[in-house]
Amino acid sequence: MTKVLSVANQKGGVGKTTTAVNLSAALSKIGKKVLLIDLDPQANATMGSGIDKTILDYSVYHVLLGLVEPSNALKRTDSNYDLLPANRDLIGAEIELTEESRREYRLDDTLKKLLTKYEFILIDCPPSLSLLTLNGLCASTGVIIPMQCEYYALEGLSDLINSIRRVHSNLNSSLEEIGLLRVMFDPRMTLSQQVSQQLITHFGSKVFKTVIPRNVRLAEAPSHGLSIMSYDPSSRGSQAYIEFAYELLAYTENTNKTSKDF
Ligand code: ATP
Ligand code: MG
View 1 (cartoon, rainbow, N blue to C red):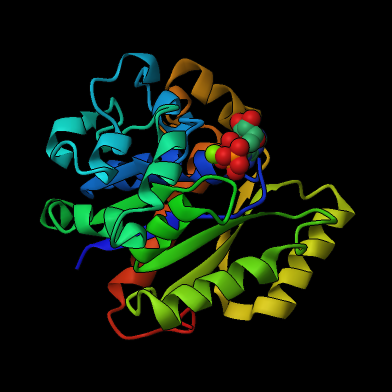
View 2: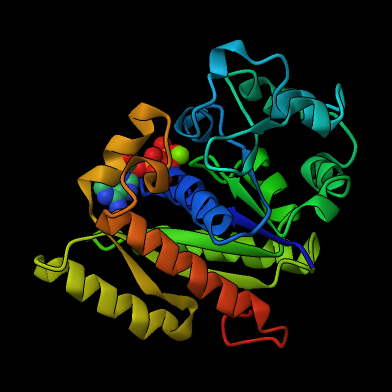
């Protein structure tokens, strides 16, 4: 069964896009068929995948509004995953969809046409609990929440988890899994260690074992339109996302429900 995973956190700049792009590339590198959906008008996942957001004929906006078939908007990336790209048009979708029927399920309805082609579909959500994020959650089987191990990390997390639980109860019972991914981790900082420990104390096995380190190569890669696997495959950032891809695979291939379930 295709795993559809939203990468979500309403906090800005916590590593959602970096995770969505590099996990897509890592899963592709180990032979999985992957689609990345950019659901953020900032279009960082689009640019970071090497696709120019300024010259798109069609984007996820046209697909959500039912103006084109998803296959007409897909782009192939150099890292061997497909991308449903975004640009600023997506800001309008929030408003235009408000009056539409099944407005929370627009992405889900779209994905039904694509599920058979992919083993993993990753969704890069915007930094808000908006209708776009809701579309991501309503289309997903699981959520990856990137967390920076810093002082304010836990603030807002309960809002996000409550929203995810509400979607699970009221809108999408297939949304069953949730995992916290520690990113931008700096082992030399006592605070990083303390917050990481706090996360494990509060969330136990919902915290992924893999830790993504703070690594300047990860920050540089998007300016070249490359994933870290293409930009610097031997970097610590690349190795960490490959390790995370294997952890996710081991976890998702276990068909029985595991402790990361709700
Ligand atoms: P937004 O909420 O605006 O969509 P985001 O949650 O998608 O942001 P990113 O864009 O992935 O966050 O990351 C924010 C910044 O931190 C970027 O400049 C990115 O290059 C950098 N960054 C992300 N992860 C790492 C890392 N592990 N090491 C170093 N820099 C990182
Ligand atoms: Mg982002």
